[in-house]
Length: 339
Image (tube, one colour):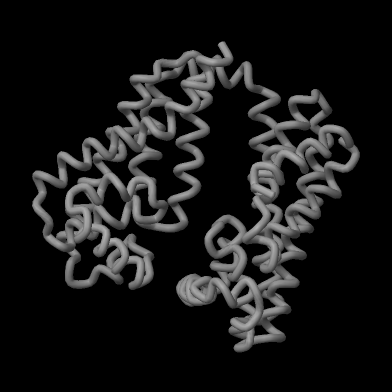
């Protein structure tokens, strides 16, 4: 079953059985945080869909509290069980699915945990790429139980509230939000510029949140009958400036690319970015815009490899316009078709 179908099936069930919102939130959050299900279950999307559905159905906001508590406990339990699995299996964890087919996940988790320690456990709930393995690696490293569980509980409830509450209140207050965005277009454009700039920083913790906020804010502004051209250019300008700064930063740190702040990429990620540059030249910056973490790493490596700045700048301008348009135009098209 496709991920979209899973999301639709769960959300449809909650639509027909509102009293099951909290139990479903617990189950979904557990699956999202449990190492064996996290890679298969689009839990965050399902929880956001549930919250939006509840708001659209006109239920009182009092239902939100139990759903957040249930999701928090579910997320914390999923992480705790994953931790105990890592603690028990230790070095043989690579023989267990899904790590048999994705051994790189353990390496990524070790790098992440080694860099951030206990704080990495706290961050793990918010960081999709390593969410499934952070608690497992913490168990493998023999992290003490109390610090792990404190970080786990705090982050699980913050994550649950951060997913459910915004989705609920955005739908519940959509008319007021639309009116505000329509009346403050320069502020929206400035915010999208800043988000696009931040998204160009090759830092895993920044990538998904800034992209999500960019898409959501842009879509809301478009649905509020805002000017598409202004926000498109604002997003493109932020992306372009980010590329220029990344290039300059890379050129100044070409001797220590794997240690340069704010880079937090593994050596193989740097190698992949360099291969892309060697294969596509200036066009690599265009391709990288739609390759996740490479979106910020390729501009940095272009500078570190001392690629010609003129062709890079031209390609970056095109890439920035394409990137901003790709994430804003679907909402504009949807708005046009549903008008």
